[in-house]
Length: 288
Image 1: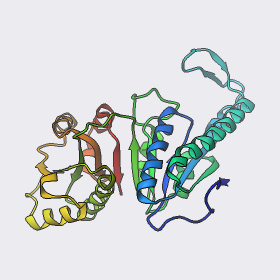
Image 2: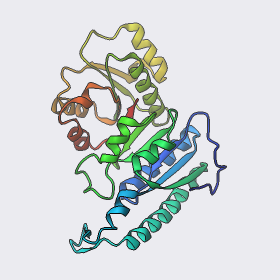
Image 3: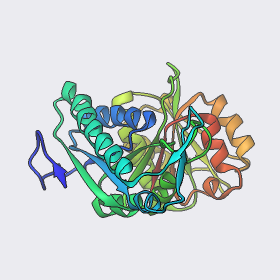
Image 4: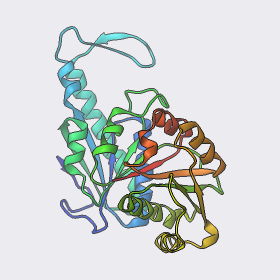
């Protein structure tokens, strides 16, 4: 079911939509605010996505199933009717939050409400030109504990870009950091994503290069054109290692406020990469 309070169903801008997954968590509402601002800058429509997780509903059907309150620690029966009511309440909250977030920007929006597996339902809606915005930790996880399983699944399977959002205080002189490797097409998509970020944030950019020869002058000039920035706003440095601890140090030196990297980036293949991303507490854009 899709609500369309101020948009016409089935229509979207050529540039793609901004999809945001809403699950009732504080982080998902922070992601919603970010999605609304991005849509205002890019002229995209916003599609909120709320999924009633079918596995949760099925689990509540077992007589022995119980749930424990996150704050109270009290164990209570896992009641199917109670779960259904909770889902309906969260969907209503998502509808109100979506309308409130986009109202100041005049952005067209709609809400998709579905019942199924979260990853499958999101992938059924997302297209190659869409940006999917996710809060990095959902309501079922302690804040900062880990990268949620839904976020990890969508990062690796989404046809378009994924923005893993976190609510942080950006440094005034902070930089957008882009990881590049030896995949030319992947690098091009990462640079395009960074260009969109800095188009409305107007921040300088650091390119981190993986192992290999230095960047040729003509490639540097092409990236400058694609980013739309001056030479003085671009810093290029080689990455001596993809060890997460060393990468963290470099990112702090660069005063990184947002990361952009391809899902094929060697950094994401390193043990401890997930802990690195969580420890840095930065928004991360992952491109196909």
